Length: 132
Image (cartoon, rainbow, N blue to C red; front, side, top):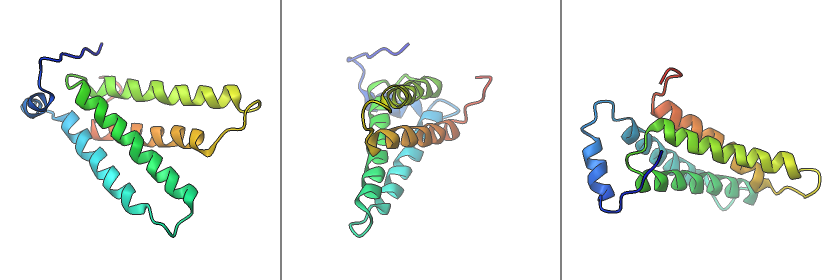
């Protein structure tokens, strides 16, 4: 599914990707960078620390998605959505499996919520249709 070719410069691939007519990955990248910028503006020292941690968690997940896109430049939007979905399902599994035996931290719930929000953002920016 995903293959990493170390002989290919990822920056050149990103430049070459703009030749593709739909430009969906570039649109996803722009939306993620915008979301990071907006979320960083929401972090303020006067706000509750839990809120700030939630916002920082969202920024961290968006950066992880961007690193995935850099590492696998040939990846399609659907493959990216699949990887985000796998991570989200893993977080849901942790919550459902251990919720009664181990105290769950707020970060566990934030991971799930933030990943679902970012997944929608990638889906919307990538203009993925159910038929794709």
